Figure 1: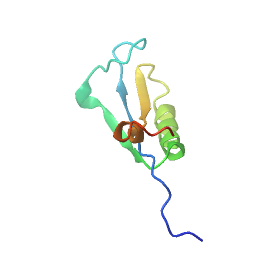
Figure 2 (figure 1 turned 60 degrees about the vertical axis):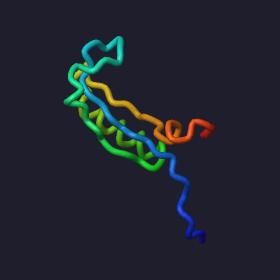
Figure 3 (figure 1 turned 120 degrees about the horizontal axis):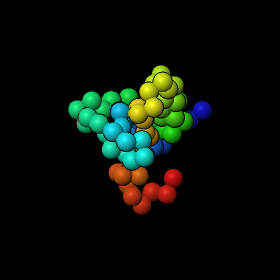
Length: 78
């Protein structure tokens, strides 16, 4: 059994109401919601899916997953 932690591939889930659904322009940046930071895509996707389902009745509301690990290390291919 290994005691070394698994590699973290940091992801951010956030969202807010869009002013136009054909673009990614938020209606009010002050009202953006940071859902959280996650150590891998699978857990980030679960959080994203939960928030997307909670707001399904609002067509203007969108949530996104940002691959933070790619921003921190652009040479990373995963």
